Length: 286
Length: 271
Ligand SMILES: Nc1ncnc2c1ncn2[C@@H]1O[C@H](COP(=O)(O)OP(=O)(O)OP(=O)(O)O)[C@@H](O)[C@H]1O
Ligand SMILES: [Mg+2]
Image 1: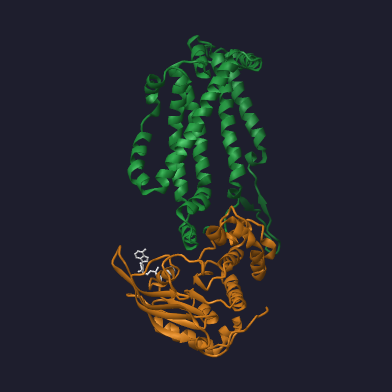
Image 2: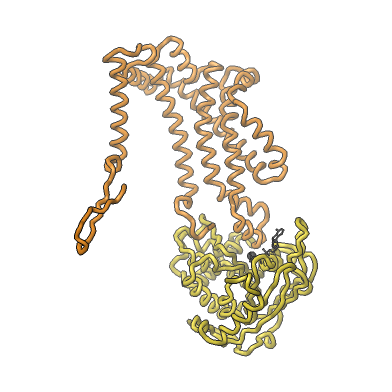
């Protein structure tokens, strides 16, 4: 959006500036999103159903995918075997998230609040964090079997680290002035932790929880790919091995709804709990 | 502006009131870098007195204030408030920092009773709320008690932090450049407010500042410090009448005092 003066030769006249608003700024966001979706689906349709450039085994047409989406949707709504699979995965995700949140928060407090945690524990956590955590899947299966427990373990393992890091960072986030204020008020370590460091760190902790929500989904599905069982991941793998690509597509779509639900649940709790963070803080720090 | 009890206009109010804070032969060496930040500092604050300390950057003003507030242990010397040695944070010390440092998740009035909440618990904090409202009226923030700090301007936030400092009726107020983050007009206004509040509450106050004008307009006495090692080199009694007004800045007497201090400090410290 640049403003250009209209060239007016007469110096006695006022100069008029006209702001040129770019085309994309005039279109509402939903319309832009819709337009992109229409374009992408149009090309997709063209490449599959209309022109047949791509084999249906590699990429089903939008129509086939929609048909299958409706089929899977019906199965889910009527309490079919797919609902059972979704329920299994939901339980996995739920328990994994709960474990990751508690373990991550506890370790985060240890690392962020104690010298021992910072000096002795943190280096190990950083080392483990750099490993490809999915590689631990066979170990979890060997330890916990092919049931839901091994999937919960893998998903929780993946999701714990972002929570540790963000919790520790959140506990460091209180400013020098705020710490000095609490010291001057004679606050105990516990009071400083609960009344200052925890609330200050909440926005950071929630950032970690959101990353964990994504990680927990990835972990649960990976676990079900590798360890079988009755979850959605197993359904996807079976469909793929039968070259039922439309089914794979629609299963992934329904699965992503589960991920979205978890993510928005965390975001919703954050909005409730960290109500002050939207306003900037002229009265606070800096 | 109502003045509960104007301060005596004599040159030495010290003569008429009792000592509140006494420091003798105080020295501080930072162990980390073997730096002698303060050496042989002696000072006495009397009841109801306003004392400022000025000095170039790094001469140990903040160090002195931190020791006086119990946030930092001294290396040697006597630091006594109301007859009791200062060994740590104390309820009868009110502090104010350069930043207002209000907690954004608490309303203004909740922020003000925070020191009570920390020391005596939630019940006591609740009982202190009427007093907090009184203080908010005193600083002209009566309508902002239930607002979150995010909605306060810088000057309003500092006024709220004045209330927080006063809530526990401290015996002494320690102020480390409290208004230096504010713009000049707001700062002048806040200094006049501070004078009025201190007079009404009969507070004993100790101010660290970089502004000579601010020190002169507010203080009964000014202590001039010099660095390496930090020490008090002169004490200047300000004999301007009270209540002080901003117009006094233009009087010859004011100019003389400022010129004298500037001379003492040398040219390097202030522009
Ligand atoms: N925690 C510390 N450890 C070691 N040296 C310190 C520490 N804090 C301050 N000092 C040193 O002590 C001296 C006095 O510092 P102080 O902060 O008291 O100065 P100041 O007069 O408040 O300066 P300013 O006007 O810039 O705020 C400085 O030389 C500083 O480098
Ligand atoms: Mg300082």
